[in-house]
Amino acid sequence: MKRVLHISDVHVEQGFGQVPWTTFLDKRAVGLTNLVLRRRRFYHDAPRVLASLAEWATGESVDVLLLTGDLTALGTEPELRAARLALTPLLEAVPEVVILPGNHDIYVKRDLAFENRFGDLLRTDLPELATDGVWPQVRLFGDDLAIVAIESARPNPEIRRSSGCVPQVQLDALPAIFEHPALAGRVILVGTHYAPRRASGRRDSLEHGLDNAEELLQVCGQVELGALLHGHIHRRFFLQGPPLPLPLFGAGSSTHRGHEGGWVFDVTHGRADVRELSCNAGVFSLSDVRATLA
Ligand SMILES: [Fe+2]
Ligand SMILES: [Fe+2]
Image 1 (cartoon, rainbow, N blue to C red):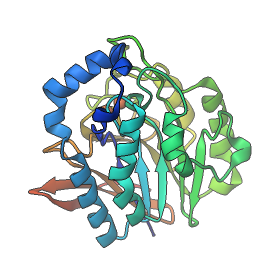
Image 2 (image 1 turned 45 degrees about the horizontal axis):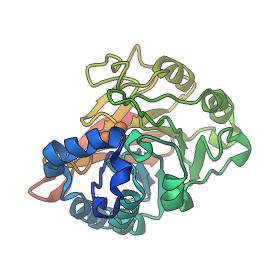
Image 3 (image 1 turned 180 degrees about the vertical axis):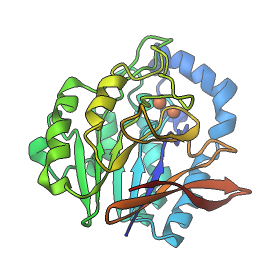
């Protein structure tokens, strides 16, 4: 059995004291104002929540952590450094990690700041099928589990836009990945930042959603046994059944005060039982099985 913990949008909003003021002469000025006036009260405890998650993961023998982006608020280098520091107990508590950036981690420009802090965790077990640097990452765990991680975030320098898109070269790589003999018979968990659907089952808005949600869902229809796991929408939910070609699990924002948690997948041969991880009075606990992939 492999136990996967899926969390997202941990938004470690720290490190701003080391950010030069000239950094805020763009959309980040709006983001910083939003942070100070509204968001900070929800996320100032994020490092403590991550430390509690690390304790929980150790006690519950989590094998794999999947973190689907938005580790920071404005994607500055000091924030990414603070996020790495805050995540260190969890990264040390779990033997394997699959990680990808969210739009907040590459807020206004795509440089190597994310790779500089988290590049040691970006890897693929099928490098011959990677078409976009390391992407899509394919990770094989034991005999029964594969995680395919897609980068769907992009910089959004326009003030009112926070949308994403899976690069065509990554979409084009997916059919060969899903058909690869190394993935045959495994439960396949596809991880990305953006949500193809909101909790209502409808598409997200043009300004906030995934441009090519339909194309991604269509190609993921090849997955016979598995699910798509995402972040970006700060609400934990899952959707399954027609017309969706595979179940969708949104982890919500795993450190948001009052909404801490994520999803836990217990994967055995040909089956995954899914439980919700939630937090009450600072104590994490698992629900009964909420969904079964079989
Ligand atoms: Fe987020
Ligand atoms: Fe996001």
